[in-house]
Image 1 (cartoon, helix red, strand yellow):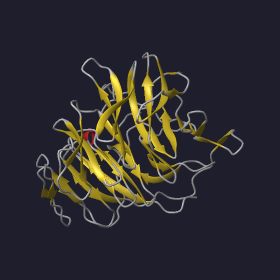
Image 2 (cartoon, rainbow, N blue to C red):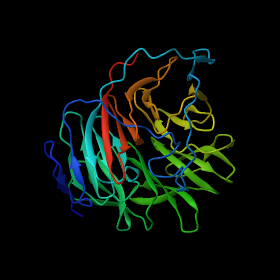
Image 3 (spheres, one colour):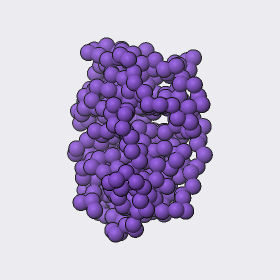
Length: 365
């Protein structure tokens, strides 16, 4: 399967072959006029991998967010001291924001749509290439990973021919990666969920769930997941990619977190309590980073970053979340990703239209 470049030049709109979408870029810096959805939702419409029904919208709390002090006690956060950062518009596409996702490495962000990938670096023109990614694709250290023609496949982030990694009959719902390790979640025709991974050149089942799996992440050779074993309660589990006995947190009532983020530790937003929480990889130690604050979606790099109806924020230890981008009316952030230099986000800019924006991450207060 050959991968062909999509031409994107200057600031003029051009037509790519991905559904004949229009691609527009902007140079320089400008203030962003967007609004972030208050829904505790994932990168696609719906509140989990197992359900496509929209979740009830969270409403911003009238109280100030609280953070956890060094003693472990909640403290009321002081007001932020810095003004929102400037943002750069990197890309505009006539395709649904709910069918696109972001992946990042140390050098760039990658917008992944069903038929194309776009390499995005602030200050440079986007680089696009046609590739049949389908839905749920991810990026490993060196390649884009996706399912096509009965196999898990990869192609270089710089383009070229794709190559099969392992035969896999059914399309996974979502891929995740950690370095060059790859895992996925599948849902069978009879609604049974399982976690798969690559073991050598073979696709292997790492875990079969007795219920539903609503989110997954990967850290080294471990797969972490949010599971509803019975439907009324949820728990976070972990299993080695090669399989073995899983471990779990205790079961908890309420709506499940819609996403997990793994970076050294695990992070998630508990919409039931309006808390951003950090969980150790052994699932034993857990702490609240901020309370009375909506954070959906979230991203983690040097710090934790959140989107909500008021803007895009950075969580500050023992301080009020610092606003990085102030958002206008009529926009919804559908995905958020960060590396050491930049924070990137995708926003719904209207029917079948999306924007990708970024802000530079300077020294945190």
